[in-house]
Length: 162
Image (cartoon, rainbow, N blue to C red; front, top):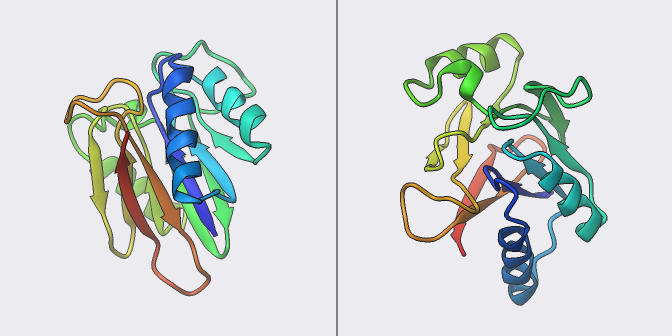
């Protein structure tokens, strides 16, 4: 299963459009999407365009909405992924709190945003921040990721710049 992952779109639906155009040029169509917060209406826009499931969480720039949690566990193809924007775990300072939370929830993956910079650490608990699709802090180009999930296989990811 291929999962597209975006974060920190901040209302820039053109960045979502660019991401989808890039994937269309590559002939890739993810089976589902993750939006790791900031701004969650963009996740709804993504769902409308792709007609795919979009798993989303709220970020620090989202209005409080009881229908959109700050943290959730997504179960896909035998994997449990802790999905969070990261601000409630202090992601800009350390990954330790997220790793502990993921471990306590039997997760083998973490997807987060907030820092606007790419982070990818494969391992027993794979950690992924796709960076910001709209406002990158680590490069001049926005970024997104594709997660590959296979039963009984380690989670893998590939980062793309648009």
